[in-house]
Every structure is written in structure tokens, then in C-alpha cells.
Image 1 (cartoon, rainbow, N blue to C red):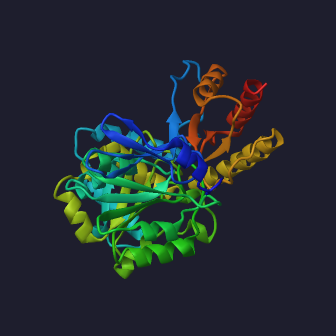
Image 2 (image 1 turned 135 degrees about the vertical axis):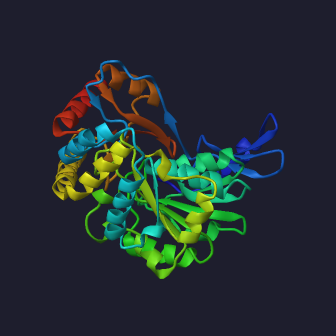
Image 3 (image 1 turned 90 degrees about the horizontal axis):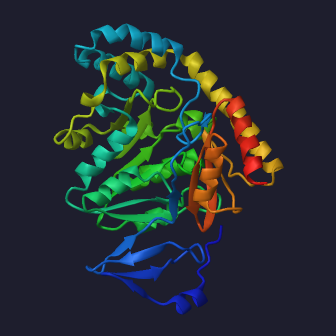
Length: 393
């Protein structure tokens, strides 16, 4: 990646006008095809330094590696609990939701009143965006990153400011802190980051969140943290016990393999949650059967360890094979990885992979076309690398 500004290109390109907006050449990452926009109110509108290519999937997909789903889940114990709970589908799940929250409270080491449940963590990201930015403001994040919260915030009138990642693909925390203004209402950090699969170190992030949360709330999305080993796999949730204004999101979609069952939660200071719950109730959207499944899955630590280990094996195989094929995958700490492929345009690449029965994702990041592939079973990853070789012939 290059951070340099091409001044000759800047002067050559000048300012272009489209409709009521003026386009400024991108200020970083060289001759980017993305841009900054200035709207009619003379405000800079930040557009992402990345975009996703999309095509319809073929009907015969044999390896679905495009949604970061756990190929081994849900836990067999969670499935049995779900089946047993189905007969009670005529009842609301408030009682069992309280049981689940007790278990989460014990796991995270925070009081129960610090928790808000929801049908997946993305739902909660979007609820927070709707409430926090209903009167405008600016949300700050890395670029690229998971855009769910930012997109909803912008839809209700907020402005988004993206800060490019560092050369090692970690968050540029110094630049993010410097970018905070009086209008900043939230700093969002996805760690490990999606779509890059990269990590920002625990100590560095902990110090940043501790310091910055004194000025503005910091939202840490930890959807993939369960796949990280060692100190960097530690959550930021402990900052809540120090009274820090952080919001930590976790999900049952990844390590628990429950993406289709929709269970997630946030941990935050009670006063923060009260402001959100004045507008929306998070737990109302979780089905009773999913609650029972989540309780059983939390107890099945052997399944979680198995998922993590098999994911690591698939990740190591995929990275090694890609390197043998001449690709340069970015070191991943998650259940997916990205690598640049510049042989063909993104949509054409997706179409050809789909024709081989393989579903993946394609992004344009920093003027390169990247494939993002989720970790499936070892058999699925072998199918992926075989198909990739055929497509690249």
C-alpha cells in the first residue's frame, strides 16, 4: 500500500463537477478511483476507499464461502435444545432471555444491567446508529471496515469520516484520535477488522479506548474476536468496570455457528443503554428457540474449541496454498482472508468462480481487486483453491 499523494495527478485532474456536488481527487493512497465529494452545503462527504463487486450466485454453489459463516455449527447441543424448545413457540422467551443474560454477564464480568440483547450484533449496530445519529453528527471509523453502522448513520443524516488503515493493515489509532472533532458522536472500531481479517493489538487498542472514551463513546465490534489467540484475543469489555464509555458488540453468528438463528449482544454503561432503549427494545427480536440454542451453545465449550481449531487449520492451508499459487494473502486472524487478484475485473472473477460452484466476495480496495474467502471445511477450501487455479488459467 502507498500513502503518498500524487500531486501531479492532483493538479492534472483538477476539480470535476457532477450535478450539485464537486468531486475532489482522493487525498491518499495514490491515484485512487474513489473520491471525496463536496455537497451543496460545502461539506466534505467521505466515500469509502473500497467498494464491493456483486453478481448473482449460480444455483449450484457447492462451497458457499462468501458470508463468513461457521461450516461446523450450530453445536449439536444447541440443535437439540432448539428442537426441544420448538414446542414452546407459542410463548415469549423473556424468562429464558434472562437466563442467557445471566450467563453472558458471568462470562464478560459485567453486571446484567450492562447488557442489551438483539437478533445478531449487526441489528444492534444499526439500532445504535439510528438513535445516536437521529440529530446528526459525525461517526469516525477505519476505511475499509464493516460499514453496517456507518451506512445506517448516514441514512439518518450523519456524516462519516474514514481513516485509512496503516501499512500493516491495523487501525491507525493516532490518526483516528487526531480526526476527532467537536461534532464526532462515535468512534467505531471493528477488531478484528472486516473485510481485511486483520488485528489491532490489545494493549494499543486498550489504551486508545481508555483515553478516547473520555471524550467520545468508542464502539468496538468484536464479532471475530473468538478466533484470535493470545493477548490480542482479549475483549475491551473490562473497560466498562473502569467506568469508560465504551460499547462492545459480540455475536453468536461466528464461533457458535448460529448466523441464521440471530443472537447477539452489546455491553455498555447502563446510562448508554437507557438512551437506546427509550427508542427500541433489543431483546424483542430474538426467538425463544434461538435463546435456548444460545444457552446450550455457551455451555458447549468443546464445540467452540473445535470450531476455532478447524478454522485455524483451514486458514493455514488456504494461506499456504495461495502463496504457492503466487498470491499474497494478508495475514488473517479470523474466519476469512483477503488476497489481491489483478488478473480480471471483480465481477468477471465472481462470475467465473460462481460457475465453478464457489461463492466468494470481491472488493476493490486501494485500487486493487481483492478476493475475500471465508473459511469452510478443509474439503471446501480444497475445492476453492482448485477452482481458483482453473479460473486463473
